[in-house]
Length: 321
Image (cartoon, rainbow, N blue to C red):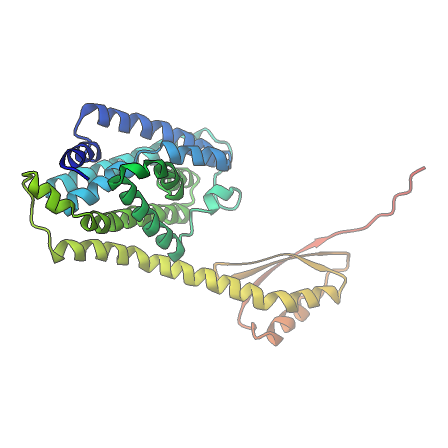
């Protein structure tokens, strides 16, 4: 990267020119509408379109560049742009949710469900995506990779989910989606700082006569601390998912056996919020629930809270001529 390239990149990432600022806000509003509509319609293609259009990557990478150059005022300005943009996306989604007759929540919408329970693997993906984004920014010959980066990193869709779930009264789901967004932002900034340092951007700016602040261990510690901070709830979420999968796996075989002995079958088995949700279907009479508890006790799950739903399925013989 040359000095002129650095100057051009800085003007773009810092949104110093009015044309860049206007483009940012126009694209942000449009991507917000597309994203919210895609989430409401449960459309993967529409949500991907919103990811490509979304411009939030620009001020986030700008924050990383300002941190490397130790331009504290610019760090604050870029972070305010990110926060302001995030609030705008949430507000647009909330307003759209007001005209949707049904609640947009994880139980009925796969786009919401995919973004309300972030895990450590999401942090790993965000870190890798941030490296690619910063690397492509430094290498003009890799600009073709940026649309793929926009698709890989999830910025606007989680914010749309925050607005829609807030409007639907699902506060816990909104907090989960907000955590996913915060995770992605922290990962992009952290990896962006690392990549820019690797490209010796500070040295290049110093040679160009830029007035730089002091960059040291304190900045690195702050960036690392933020990443570690978001990793804690992600780790908790990952553990809960592991527990859910483990519990369902242990309960599946004894419950299937219990149902088959009574000419019933297990139609659905889930573990949510510490409760094993069991849905069974079969002909009357209803099976004895005491035997269900014994089956779970034999599997070492006697302390498990169970909610059993029985659905009768009568069979009628129909003759046609």
